[in-house]
Length: 155
Image 1: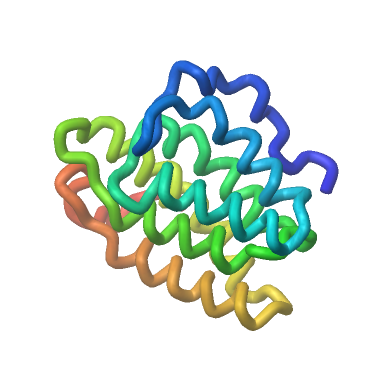
Image 2 (image 1 turned 90 degrees about the horizontal axis):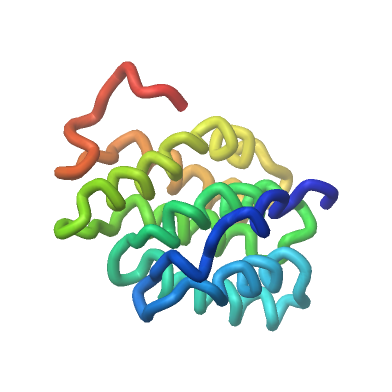
């Protein structure tokens, strides 16, 4: 896996927040998704879903999205379809009191469109199906923070 999660140690997670408080445990959960067994992966991904994208998006969500893209693209990750579905969830959730955070989290997902395009051609049918759903969410995305769909948006 080489460079998967590279740079995660550079993020000041203890200064970021998720749905239930401090994001200091996020890197551990991302690592479990990357290198755990199937049961560990699923439990860690479930926690990340609750913390980063189920209720709203947070500054920790924005910081985590590039690493979620890493996980989605890594063949060795057993829960890749779930990681892709978490990216969809992040794109669909808001944080109206903090539109700048919402915009940054959504932008981080939208900026991975090229990766989603590659995943759409993946050999795993579950990954392909999840990627098609993510691409549909990206293509239809519009929210108060991001504004209407911008055909000039870079992917």
